[in-house]
Image (cartoon, helix red, strand yellow):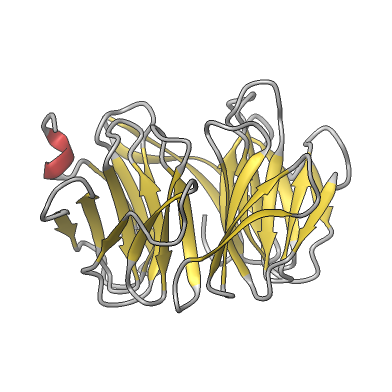
Amino acid sequence: MAGCGTLAVLEQNEAGIVLLRSFDWNDGLFDVTWSETNENMLITCSGDGSLQIWDMTKTKGPLQVYKEHTLEAYSVDWSQTRGEQLVVSGSWDQTAKLWDPAVGKSLCTFKGHEAVIYSTIWSPHIPGCFASASGDQTLRIWDVKTPGVKLVIPAHQAEVLSCDWCKYDENLLVTGAVDCSLKGWDLRNVRQPVFVLLGHTYAIRRVKFSPFHATILASCSYDFTVRFWDFSKPNPLLETVEHHTEFTCGLDLSLHNRGQVVDCAWDELVKIYTPSCLAVPV
């Protein structure tokens, strides 16, 4: 995925990283999510406010375009809980929207944020529950069965650019912000963060919990680094990886290959690797 409006589907094999399929869109693509039901289907969101559904088995696309957001659509995520097939998008128009890929229009619009929404992430535990992070300095929790916001957390005294749910604890989320800090939040008591991780020197662009370790997470930043943390340790910073020459803006951890990480940056490079801190059992 690149700012020029290209969706690139890559595969790692013995020859390295291979381009499987490439699709073009007429505006920058900001986020992408895989379907949880069809291994060939993806959804992207773009600078023109639209969402696009792509099928890897087709040479051209998209299959469908949703155009409802009035400003940049910056985040998109596919629900991971069984019994529902829902997509949530977050936009610079300050709204989040709920979609069923089988329906041609949004099912619901969530309003409440007072600034740009940068991140919308489904709970991996609770059906119909998602979190959103915003430039209004808050983390908000929503339930698709009720129209209003469920919980508002004043998470940082700065724009919150990213959030993620812990895979092992339904009450634990992490936020990353322009103030260079990561904060952990227990939804049962949000008066104080349960941990604060300091070390980045510029805004944190994305944060992800490990799918294999209950207390490990990764973050990438405009300081060009990716950092790995274990918030249960007295010295939580496990490792700093600096292999990009520009802002690192994308990050994910493999659900299938234990310890494998992918990141990308403004230097137009995608890197797949296993950091040393995840290469051995923790």
